[in-house]
Amino acid sequence: MAVKIGISLIAWQNDDLPDLTRDYTTEGAMQDAARIGYSGVERGRRMPADTEGLRAYLDRYGVSLCGGWCSGNLLVNDLATEKDAIRGQVEQFASLGAPCIVYAECSNTIQGDIARPVSQRPKLSREEVTGYAAKLSELAKWSRDQGVVLSYHHHMGAIVQDAEDIDWLMEGSDPALTLLYDTGHLHFAGADPLAVLDKWADRVHHVHFKDVRQPVLDWVHAEDRSFLDGVASGVYSVPGDPDGCIDFTAIIDRLKAMDYDGWIVVEAEQDPGKAPPFEYSKLGYDHIVAICTRSGLTIES
Image (tube, rainbow, N blue to C red; front, top):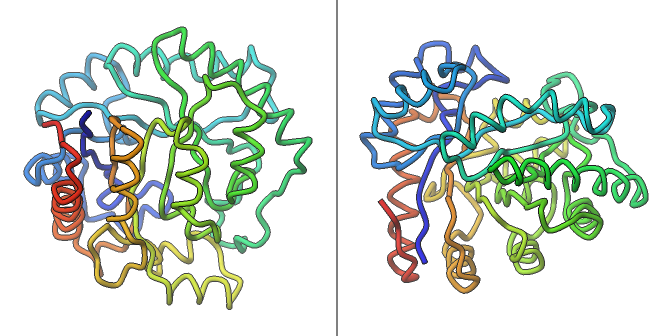
């Protein structure tokens, strides 16, 4: 049993708030990630779009493709339409040996709207989530049959955000649909990350590590601000940041106990003017290595 440590380049290349990272290039981000020691990166929008171009790009920096975001629209699309919409990414990720596609419903999300408070996010009933889960199960089976696992990303501002939403989605879906476990989004949503991990350990296929600065989160709630307001103000950080509030040692211990052998991906979007990407990404990497070593969780290079 071993884990691999990857990173999302969102600290250098924020697609939702591009002005934050306008002074950084994808090439510089790839160089930094490889120099720090990350084994993989999740696909970003500014990487080569074609499969062979992306393969050569990853090889140039000596890293693997460890997943990547997929904006789903299954809530409004029929199954055939959604398959056609994501087919190219599924085929590409299967060809490149990616562990999963990071799928999230975006047809009615408010996560990218800086003017909409996160309190206004869409909330479905249990019956509606269960119906969506059944439909999503068929998409997940199809993706699995094409050679790549579909991992669902619970996300602030979206229909699957908190522990209750996750329960309904997992209970209503086939095991072919796996769960992306994101520490930062869980804490932001008011969930207990350890409790969610304990309950759905058998469905967790991919892990995102990000920490939360509690005073900033308290401000978001008190002032009824948007998700992007929180990001721009520094609600998220990397594991190991002394300003963070999540106990990653306990989470690593739990991952070891459940024999997790997938990727742990650092994904912590911040203002690089306040949190230099190389410095913070190295802090996150070093902290994960240290707590994995203490826990006895082997890291695969």
